[in-house]
Amino acid sequence: MSDRGATTAFDVHQHLWPEPLLAALSRRRTPPRLHGDVLELGCQGSFEVDLAAHDLQARLRDLDRDEIDVAIVSLPPTLEIELLAADEAEPLLDAYHDGILDVARQSEGRIRAFAAGRALDGFAGVTVAAGTLADLDGLSPLLTELTRRRGVLFVHPGPSVSPHGAPDWWGPVVGYTAQMQAAYAAWLSGGVQRWPELSVVFAILAGGGPIQLERLRSRGVDPGLTLRPNLYFETASYGPHAIGLCLETFGVGQLPYGSDAPFIDSQPTLQAVRGFGRAVADALCCGNPALLFAQPGV
Image 1 (tube, one colour):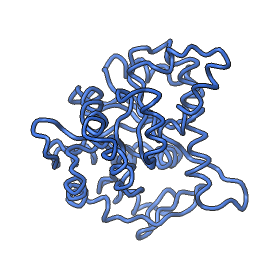
Image 2 (cartoon, rainbow, N blue to C red; image 1 turned 90 degrees about the horizontal axis):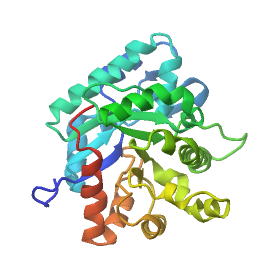
Image 3 (cartoon, rainbow, N blue to C red; image 1 turned 120 degrees about the horizontal axis):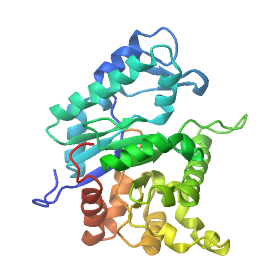
């Protein structure tokens, strides 16, 4: 754990699949399912999964190694969308929600969770796929309810279709960032005005959204829209150059640290954040997340 005394250090972007969900997926005969340590996702293909990385005690050891006190975990929309399309969708989602709340209780506060696509008691907020922000009218009931609860909206990449013959990295590098830039633009164009009090965290620096601010201004976009203090850009997978650009653009107040563990090694981004010095690291790891997650559960 951190050595900051009363100051709590957060990682706002991790994933942890509770045992009830893993067991439910293992019992299935059709995708989405777990076959041994292979996750079969139908049209998205099959992927090997390090099941040990989803063990609570292993995760707590990783948090101790990183001097992180609290991880905010979520169900990736890439998996959530497959669950929603499955027969017995609700029991699968219940297995995640009930299971992750039990994990949070066992962790004694070191694990907190986003609900998957719906506002539920006991959760820090809601995760939605980036593509859903293209239809803000469709999301309106959820966003209004989340605002009422003073919860956090976490916008995360969803499934990505790569061109034929594209390398394995295409989806995470090209597809995910394109989704996130589009989601950020959708929020600036319609969401900010309709839900001005809702705190929104865009994963992976909104796909590099801050790089587009000068171009947005050249097209007449009000710069004030981009500088609202309740719009946040999470850092997973990025290093000193990209994070430095965001710090120059927004200052320290709109960036919370996140790692995307266990799917990405937390160390490079964490070292980059701490490389900016104690004041910046404390803001990204402690101060900004503390403001975001002041509510014990929505």
